[in-house]
Amino acid sequence: GMTTLMWSFMLFIIVVYTTALFFREALGRRKEENVYEFFNSVPRSMFTTFRCSFGDCSTNGGVPIFEHVHESYGGAASIFYCLFVFGVTIGIFNVISAIFVENTIAVAAALATDEKRHRLQDPKRWNSTITSLVRYMVEISARHKVPGRLSDCVDEIYHVDVHCGVIDEMIKYPEVQALLDDLDIDREDHIHLSELLDPDNGGTIGVCDVIDGLRRLRGEPRRSDIVNINMMVRALQVLTSELSTKIEDIHGLMFSYRNSRRSSE
Image (cartoon, helix red, strand yellow):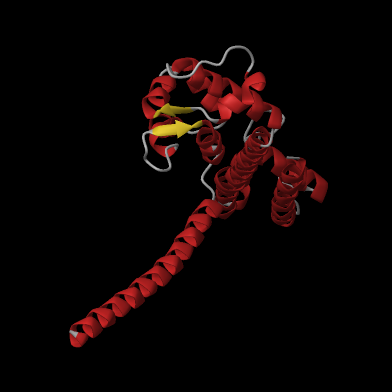
């Protein structure tokens, strides 16, 4: 913020100084009434130029300075003044505003990203939230009942598996939706959790699959996720190619064995 402000100030001062030099040489040499006293030195010319850039370009009596300039120096000076006001108002001020807005948005995005990273790396948030989700899953399932604290029944919880319908039913609870939001899991993924968390399409989901799947769903999609899948697909391609070669070898051996049996008969 302060760095941007200083650079914006320097840019504006350079424009005002350059224009003030021109006004000093063009309007501060002849002693014209209501003109000379405003441009008779570089500091006075800079102050007048600064005032004019913000719309306060008048004499002590309230008469616009450049009305007198127009009468004394003609239309060329008025045209230059119009171009100066247009350039400062439409150009310089808009550029400065755009720089401030861009930096403000960039800082806000960086702060949001940093806050989200801290949430994703907070072990207490993860442990407490996933414990609550597992308790909801066990309570909704009619097949499993875990009395007391979950920490006292770790072995039983580890072997718990529920039907996919339990996950679909659990997602309907506002409390569960709030817990998933707290884990930064996209709302659009909530209704597909039963499909996403069932890796073998067996119709049942274990607690370990739920925990591992929710951990992978947290946050925004990352390039590493795509690269990981790509590497796994390549590994499967290699294994499939090796398996295909072995099947062809076995088929060749069986074909040779069948031919040898026929010839012996």
